[in-house]
Image 1: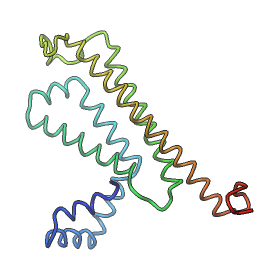
Image 2: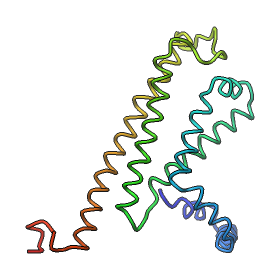
Image 3: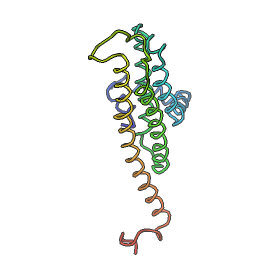
Image 4: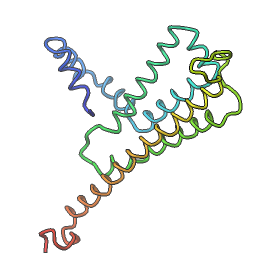
Length: 194
């Protein structure tokens, strides 16, 4: 999951894969740009801005009225999500450091999604004029917005919370393993180090 470039090259295959990988290896600029694009700060910021910008009523309504803007909106969602999750799942040698940053990364995503979901859920008025008079599921525009906010808030945040728990446990195990490797005298009794 963390090395989708390998999968991409496998899918492309043949000469094209060789050409792409050769160009990548020769281009220090592309590799430097990729390192900057995949830093925790950038991936989280791009992810959060993509979600918040496209929930601002004028932008949201504009995307519903323009096919190209709607495609661009979803391209931003996809791109920011790929970068966000690539950072989370990429393999690394320094697991304890990576897991700790991943926990913080997920927590910050959890917080911003919670705030936006709560704002949509508890709003007393509909944010999006495009839906005025619409009745797609027997809900008012405000009712539909509140349901959407609740779906963003609860299931979305449950996923972030679950992953934070998993990564926090992995972080603690990696710290323990690193400590035992560096200081075998502190290994727990009964693990063969007596």
